[in-house]
Amino acid sequence: MELLEGKLVSQKTKDELKLEVESLKKEGINPKLAVIMVGNDSASQIYVRNKNKACEYVGIEFEEYLLSEETKQEELLELIEKLNNKKEINGILLQSPIPRHLDINEAFRKISPEKDVDGFNPINVGKLVLGQDTFISCTPFGIIKILEDYNIEIEGKNAVVIGRSNIVGKPMSQCLLNKNATVTICHSKTKDLPSITKNADILVVAIGKPCFVTKDMVKPGAVVIDVGINRMEDGKLKGDVDFDGVKDKVSYITPVPGGVGPMTVAMLMTNVIKAAKNQNK
Image 1 (cartoon, rainbow, N blue to C red):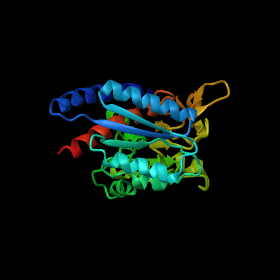
Image 2: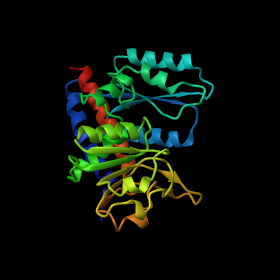
Image 3: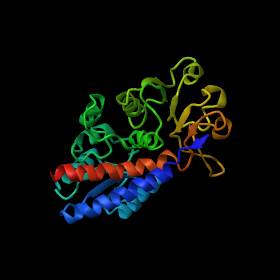
Image 4: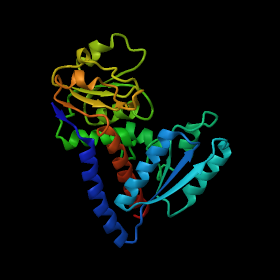
């Protein structure tokens, strides 16, 4: 079993991006990201801090907009529109979750497709489905990057994705399909899940249930990507896969933490730089 160390791939990616930003700045291009956070979700605060740190490291300018829990939909949309029109802002990210009274899909639609570095605007989602060049949402993009970095063949493989969220499951399935894998999507209504997962050469698990995938659900020699981050009562982080039970049966597996998480941030940096280059063509 080999660990797919997202932390290392992420660092390597950020080091490459840092050099790229240095040369862009010589051409007068200063990549800049605006992050909007509504409310005070503690996990979101940590994610935003990590994004800020990564931007600082790579050389991307970072602007944060903190809105109160009581923010109205119109106010959120007005802010997005203002950032759409700000020429110096290349990327806009709306940190989720947002308070329940707000419509996140309407907000994603409002973000200009050219600045949608999270890949959630329907235009960019559509381009992903059509196999066109676009911004790919950062977690699936990061997973593809890990697989490529470790020279893991995707083409022709049986790939199974557990979870069908708009943030991970659906774009992940599409990314694998675009790389010529044969893709099956499983979810809470799937019948006899183990019979499907046992045929997976590549198994991506993104459902938010700690240690849900056990040894008997995994094919010997499979590549297992664990997207889950679940904080247990003892404060430890566990993935959606029973790591200790599964690790001796598989060929590759991502650890939690240190697997998929760091890649998500690195791919956000990649998308911001891409946006800056596109806007300055």
